[in-house]
Image (cartoon, rainbow, N blue to C red; front, side, top):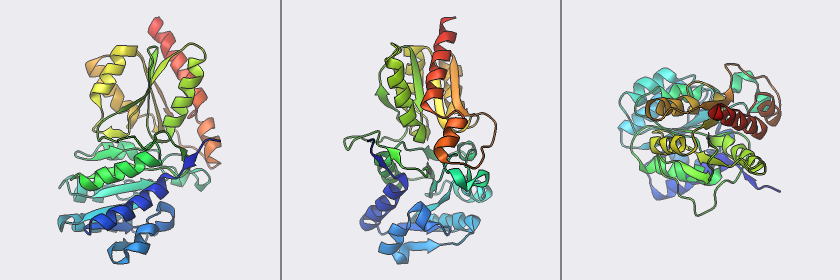
Length: 314
């Protein structure tokens, strides 16, 4: 059985560890601490925990004030609420002054499932990517989540870390070292490159394994840092394989695919395919079933790779 772990629990436990090391770490919440797992920090450091209620705009403004006072605030809620509900506050109070605020959003994508369309965050990466100065991270598993949160705490500036609701298979082992702005090669191959983020990294690996059984060897890159993106890794992938498939639990525009395409078209144009939501909102349903229905599966990735190789050969 494949081992799966919670990215949200990893985040909550890492906050406690950071809080023990640094008294300037503070945590803000918008009435969802049991879902974002920040209750672990609240239980240990109640004097440094601020529940702002269902008032995400106020939470971001308070976080900005704390950062301006020398604290290191981590503000958390669901990805539909931040940056969505409080985009103006994120833009004006965090991005423009480039304050040391860490926004950690859980429940990204459509794998939120039965919470329905109102809670499916599929535009959040497009919104946050549009803001100058933000570091944007989408971890692939619990191990990477812990390291990304630690990196955010020790690196000055605004961060957005996007987590998902379901438990995910472990992609990395304890020897893994997260580096801000760096991709990780998980599979070697020459026919095409699959670049994936977050919850889609594990399906990308599954697709690559299936393709290898058909004598189609693919390079698989995990791109945990969406911004600043690893341009060198993208250019090398285009040069080495001549075809790229991007995979993300997000709308096709504004996220990983758009960011990779900008690098490719400027530096080394090659055929590309995009496994993502196609300009549509999903519906309510079980997360796994929604991913399958809307083409966010290992099968869809496999088909995209075959399509891109055919285009490359034409």
